[in-house]
Length: 267
Image (cartoon, rainbow, N blue to C red; front, top):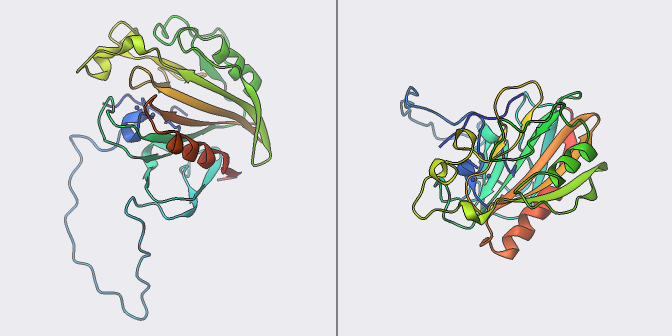
């Protein structure tokens, strides 16, 4: 399943686009559109003894405690243990974000955590060069966390770290960090202008085997994406914590803890 259509660090995520919020996600279906009608306001009845008033949520909208971030059509249900206030859900991207400024590319120093899963047998096309992604798609997709991490390690321009073994909720995989070159930065430029030298004005990390177009792309120069690539009963799950070089270390630690709190179940 292709998680994306380019929207305009909306950068699909993280997942978890730090480049933040819907602007962190990159591709995948964007929320709303010119043809969407605004809902007609309706009056709300005062709760009675037979009615339970909805719980009062933190200002950001996500209650502390277990929070299911994936949709009903995803191959795996991913739940995070939200331990602090301030997280905002982005259900259209299977993501949570914090300190989002809503800009594309973002100017704030927030984070996003994406949780994307594909059914067993689905491969990931890690592009040889994210800028020239149309012509550097592999002949065969990577099928396992080891193969996917190895492909990222050899990817041009992203300056990938060495991959490490990781286990989340008892499921093994690989962790690796990617970085978008700061050389793409142009003052007062849009995301498309920053990556105008790239195929279709996109700096794309990977696509999904058998599907057209890229899946995950960057929203700005300097973007950092920490990936947990896991095999969950044959399904590939990628947790993506995305942030900016200027993001406070405490917030980076918070999104890492959130990612590592993930549990996985059948949808």
